[in-house]
Image (cartoon, rainbow, N blue to C red; front, side, top):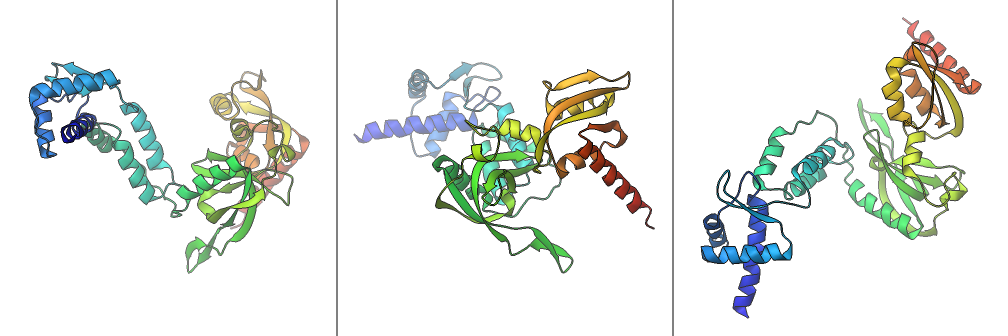
Length: 334
């Protein structure tokens, strides 16, 4: 029985060592594997390594033997390939809503999914621009709470904080208590949001996770999202994000824009290629789409200056003119 247990432990350690130290550019020989196993307290012969690798291969582990760049074995296929780990690593490192502590933990876990040599290469090549990371360590746990509440159709309670200036520095205020029916988690504009309904209004609102604290799942039944938005069978997060600008809420309206040809890629990226385009003249095109008209949309349009003109609806066009005049007046102040 003891020998049988030792054999099982040896197989597990062998698989662990192959995953950690081998890849297609760094095969590991049977002799090297024996040495590594001895460091783990298991003495073995080179011939037995071949038998063990054969067992792992029959089990479904993709282990190959190569003579280049040197003789040895390596894990040929992993759950995550190197380019996939790189994508995930970049996402984790650049997401401001993931705290420094959690960023370090996740980066370490991701590196554990590739070989030691590959992990070294990834860490050397990574460049992350200097940006602020949020300090709310509750975000990680709040994601789990929100997921459970959505699955159980329950409301959640939390305190929601905004920043205030105190002694020339910003800090969170005392917060305001909310009870919300959660519908979806959304990643947009480098921030993580929860879309949900505040019972006081017949609409969907967005809340930033980095501003939420002391969250709990209540015993109250969640309000169906079909009562407060156009979605019936499921909450379409992709469609919701496409129609929402900077996570502001508003009424859905049909909007017509005259855009400079230089913005074709920008408009297609924002609205999608399936919206209605038409040529206006040799310098511009017209686009028609349904969006939620809000401050977020207005701010998004203003950034493009004279390269986007609102043709309709008249209310949005008038609001744009009002904002432009206010900006002009502000710049007249000396």
